[in-house]
Length: 180
Image: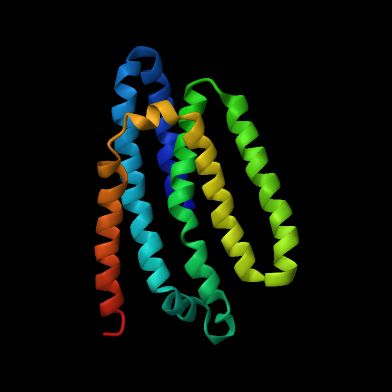
């Protein structure tokens, strides 16, 4: 699933870089649309996958992996964060702030390693899943801080709430239909 985000973001990067030099005033609207599309893909995967995690694990791996069900349910929530952080990282690169991206990644990675070393021996697989999601959320928060002026211009009702509402409705339908 991470490949979807990577393909989209990598293919957009040259065009966005060119747009930044020729028509920079159009970038906020483009960024808003890209985030909308990324969340429209990622949120249904996270919601539906979380609801169907038990069935997915049983279908793919069988009874021997039942411990992975809860971890998968948690880990799927890294997808929306990851889709956004990858794109926003490119946005920061386009702005010429490579050092800021590097610092944010170093901080998040260091925190992830330290907390995993501390928590996994005590809490196991679930701690690893939670820390993966938390680390990506921290990276997103750092990018959000760096891009706060740009992000304030966006229509968050359109970018975030619409895909979240659609994913929630889909999740309710999937939840009630999963036993059929």
